[in-house]
Length: 360
Ligand SMILES: NC(=O)c1ccc[n+]([C@@H]2O[C@H](COP(=O)([O-])OP(=O)(O)OC[C@H]3O[C@@H](n4cnc5c(N)ncnc54)[C@H](O)[C@@H]3O)[C@@H](O)[C@H]2O)c1
Image (cartoon, rainbow, N blue to C red; front, side, top):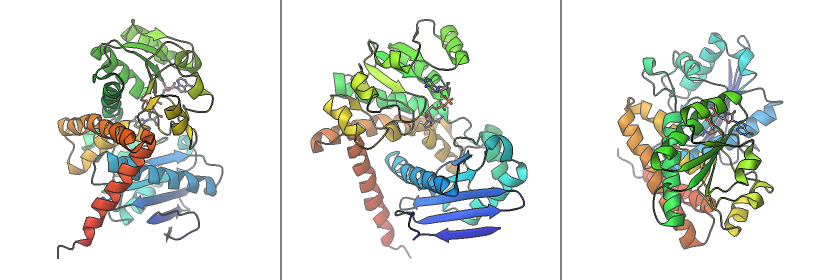
């Protein structure tokens, strides 16, 4: 096995540690990036993806680990931000020896990095990795884990939406509003349930026929539209992107009928500057990484021994955090995405600094 750790490479961009992991026998090639441990051990999932090159994998893991530091900081967790990528096709490479070899690299960091599921890795994979490492979350319920993190992700997005509704219309409810849900996957389905329970009308779309069949059966009152374009140009008050990243781009934002955007998808802003375009058009955007933190709150709870009620209570706090960010954005005259980054940076700096007060 080879381990190479670096903090000062040209790409590292403020990261504390970047570890290249290789095990020729199993074919493992992975990179673990720790952006910050200012608030505690770095937590972030392991993505398994067939990148075109190592440079592309490195770029992704550096970006993702920075994002996790901000997400965990605003989720109120005593955890820093990290992420890992395993380079390869998840359908082909994920053998028991490869995952266990990866687990030994996670273990070798001695708790500076906790892993979890991400694109291409699942609860069952975490159970295998956990046979070699104590620093694994997102495990199955049978193994003491939190199971599927979409439960509290959807709950948290709903809380963020309540805060945005209050900011926009004076009352923390979606009752009487029309909400467009793009993507009826694990999160979108559960979000739809919360919205219906709250008295909202839901318009939805998905590219998957099974998802559409599900919604027609579970919630016949939901209006199904052909695609995202039809959704965003329909008469909706709130747009909830719950499919892929990049949902808000130069074409989408001018076409939006909704005056509020709150959804589960990661990296909704297609490029820097979109947050300003939204603000200029009077669209209230609750930052994705703030409102979709319920999943990381859920898996982080495993570190203390998973307790669903405690985790749900913490995810409910996304309502207060979103309110605070929207208030700060108004007070400082900046888009909410900028206010969120500032608040996260402030918490990392101010709380992280306390470690210089030595206890012994
Ligand atoms: N699951 C979690 O705990 C969690 C946590 C944080 C963020 N997120 C993010 O939330 C989003 C949804 O996550 P999920 O777990 O529900 O994923 P999922 O894969 O279960 O669901 C995604 C759904 O979007 C649909 N979709 C894909 N392209 C589409 C398109 N162009 N138009 C309409 N629908 C489309 C898919 O068919 C699928 O039903 C993702 O961006 C994910 O990264 C999820």
